[in-house]
Image (cartoon, rainbow, N blue to C red; front, top):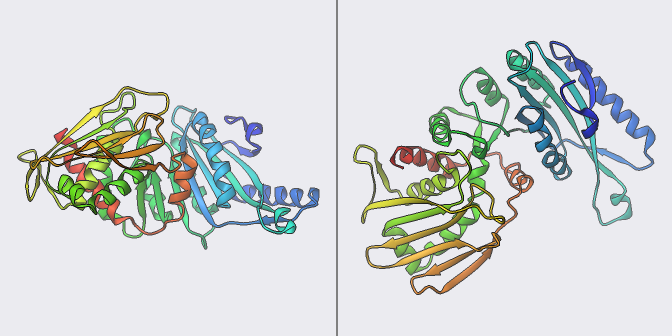
Amino acid sequence: MVLKAEQHGLRPVKSGFGFDVAAAERALRDQWAAHASSSEEALLRERALNLLVIVEGADSLERAQAALEELMVSHPCRALCLVLLPDAPARTTETYVAARCALAQGKSEAATRRHLCGEQIVLVASADAQLELISAAAALVSSDLPTFAWWRAEPCLDGEFFARLSEMCDRIILDLAMARDAKRHLRAIARLVPTLEETAITDLEWTRTLDWRASLAECYDVAHGREAIQCAQHIKITCVPRHNMNLVPQAALLAGWLISRLEWRVDEQQRQILAPSGAVRFSFDRQQETARVEPGSLTSIEFEAESGAKLSLRLTPDGEHIETVASESVIGRTIRCTDRSETCLLQRELTELARDAIYERAVVATSAICDLY
């Protein structure tokens, strides 16, 4: 067995080449029957959605498992974990299942004694069995529920695996924090967006910029802030880099968002970003790692206009607040950052089905500036 199944309450169903979908369903029914017969409390078996989790390697599954188990409390679902093992021996496939239950919180005593239950199916495959992996997943999703995919690995956006995944899913959630070459993946997403007719795509690195975007939008409602942003000649974005990453996705996406929302133009031939007030220069600075700020996180953004108007937003040293500072170096506003844990970010994304047009325009603009920096 490739996985340490007992650590996560997983029951082995089948190993050897090929997936037996019927055996997985039978194993789950047996687990539900065992739960029902051994518990004096009511079990509420719920499925609000299908969630496909794509990871690479057994260790990656273990890192995702804690977030997944916490997520299933708020979003009872059928979770299908697709574990890609590129270095495994040929014709390696394994299947595991688990019933997941959590105590429901309610106002009445009866409600608090019910258990909300979801279920997990883990499918493991070597490189030569990846298409069998996606076929088995397609047979196991509940067709009457929305289907999300959380790609918690280096994205691979071309080829048949992704094409078939996008046909199954209503929303695909990437995480460019996992990417070794962020520029290449941003370009790939920008090319992909116009081709997806019914499938939405987003990125947790985009979700991590939400507090910064909200703060900047509020600054734009004030005359001084609007002048500094709209008439900016120089915009400096600072972040804590990740190791071996050629571009910090959060910084690049925030720049792309500003360009797209302000309707500035990227002149790739002249290597310029053009606003109605003239050329805008972006610079990306890197800050040393700190214990309280996650690598890859934004730490400040500064605007300077030709008129002398200035505006800066900066992360406090504790990493929990964003301060807004005007030209007079007076802190005008401080907001608390929302929870940026992986589970919280996913919970936010699982409430959305529609395409995010603002993200799509931002990622296209981000792709256009990748070669400028």
